[in-house]
Image (cartoon, rainbow, N blue to C red; front, top):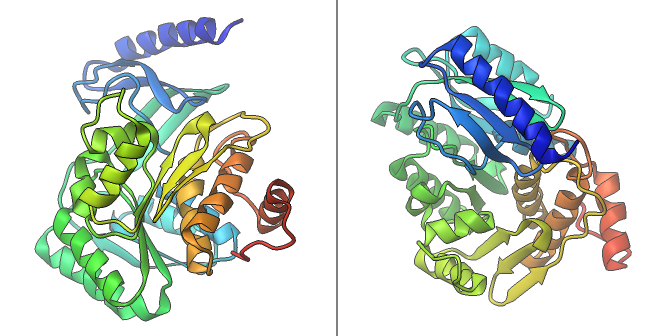
Length: 330
C-alpha cells in the first residue's frame, strides 16, 4: 500500500470522526513524516490550513537539553490545576520549574493526539486564546532577573498562544543582552518582529520566506541575509530538510544533512534549536554549534517518535562526520 493510499483511508476515518464529534470540533490528519496537515475538517475553529506545520512543543526542547546534561530552567504560564501539576511532574529531575507562573484566570493548555502508524489521525486541543497582562509580565521578568546570573542562554519557543508578546519578548531580549546571555528564538513568522535583537533564530525554509514576504523564486541566501539585517540578529540558522541547513553569520555556511535514514522528523526542529543553543553556550562558535545541531538533527530523524539525543551518540556521530578527535562537550 502506498503512502497516498494509507492517507486516503485515514482521511475517510477522520471524516467519520468529524460527523461523530460535530461542528465544534476540528479534526486534523497530520503526516508526521513531513510534519504537515494533509486533511482537516472544521478548520474555521483555528484558521489553520493544509500544509500547516506541526510542532511537538517546548517539552521536546527541554528534554533535549536535559538529556545532554544541561541544568534547565523552564519558564511559562499555566493554570492552577491538575494538568499543570502533571506537566511539571513529567519533566526530568534536572529541570527547575520555578520560573513557571501559575494563574487562576485561565486553564493549562491540554493537547491529546491519536496516532495510527506514522500518521497523527486526531488532534484534540483544549485551550483558550489569551494575552498576558501587565502584572503577569512583570512577575515573569522579575523571576528571570533573579536567575539571570545563573544562565548562559535563553531559548524562546513561540507557539502563538499569547505568552511571548512583543513587550515581554523585548524585555527578555534586553535583559539577556545586558547580561551577555545568549537568546535564541524558534519564531512564528507572524510574530517575528517581537524578537528584534535576539542572538539567533532558527526558522525552517518556509517560515524564513514568510517572515520577509519573499516569493518562492527568491534566492535563499538573500532571504537569510534579509532576516539577519531586518531583525538585527547576530546569526540566522535556516533548516532546509533534506538540504541540511544554512547559517548566516559573518559568512554563509551551508551544512549538508548527514542523516542515514529518515523514519520520523517529529521534534527535529526542537532538537536543532536546543543543541544549537547549548553548544554555543558551552563555548562553540556559531558555525561549530550549527554543525553539532545538524548532527543531532540527523540522529533524531532516524528514530521513531519524538526523541532526544545522548551525549555519547552525539559525540561519536559528530566525530565520524567531521573526522575530529574532539567536540564541544555540551
